Length: 462
Image (cartoon, rainbow, N blue to C red):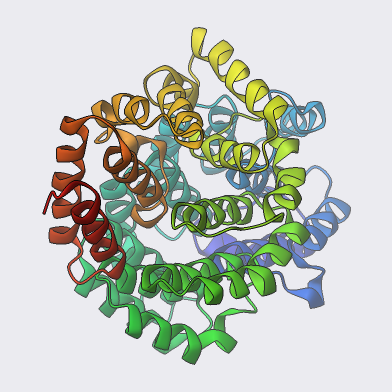
């Protein structure tokens, strides 16, 4: 889109460079479609070209810093270079006659950088009231709600602007794909499947809509349908290099669900681990940690795989951007028996919990971050009674750490397995209740059936 096209859309960009505007649009396109266009040098290449075209283009700085923040791989609190980048953006915003729309985008990122993610999301929502076609605000709000575990807000945020996106509006199917994910996370499975399928009918390479359908099959324990869908569509989505690892992760979960561990390990070794080690993306790191931990809980020997992963996660020990991330970094340090990293991670969490200020995630450390972290440590040490004591009182609050229902299920499994292996009769009874609850919510799940058989064999509970 040229400068005039952005102006016609009601979002005037404060630059005289048409080239900068086109590159801003190209960067946004790649962010929304989860791809790096190699012909343009990917997102990083586009951002460099924006800076070359107009180094003072504030919205160029906004999208660059916004992508760094939403990627949760760098913290401006400990990364001085990133802090400097944010300051440049803020200083430029103060010296230019920006539109109110642009000023609000700057304010949202400044707020997010301080860790006040809910307030940042509020600013993006204010933007969308006047600019419902602002795809950057739509996507940043969507991702923020995901990090906050605010499923209803994630759904409704898109539903409010969806009528403005007609089929002729560029990328409207991708907005529909975002809506499908909000429907999924609020348990409207059939509607989510319908909307995601409509989006894929427009563009079969829409990774996010593929991702929604992968979730639906998992949530409904339609394992064979899920596996069939993955195999049939792989060539469509594997080029979405920012999300491909995560979709392969879902594929591996189907195999774990079935108890076909070798197949899951093959996917891990062939795709999931290599993509992660190459990208260093936090989403990829989380997926790797989660998958290895799930396999271990199933009794699978994952060998030296943790040792390679911990070399990537160790760099993020002191980030503390999201509790969700910290817990998965911890899984890697525990899995690799890196006691130094484990100790450092836990101690720094304790320090941050003392004075979180306006940092929302850090305000949750005391109530959620520390007990969940300690529970993972105790689980690894076989102290199952302690795990139950730590996790059961907060089980309904775990939603607040963010992520999807599928991702957070790892904590449900930890609690069930701990209660099952506990030496306390009351905990064994709890395990029975939790497994029954799981079976009601996800009937015909092979994994749940295995847990039921184990509970019955070990404790004569069922």
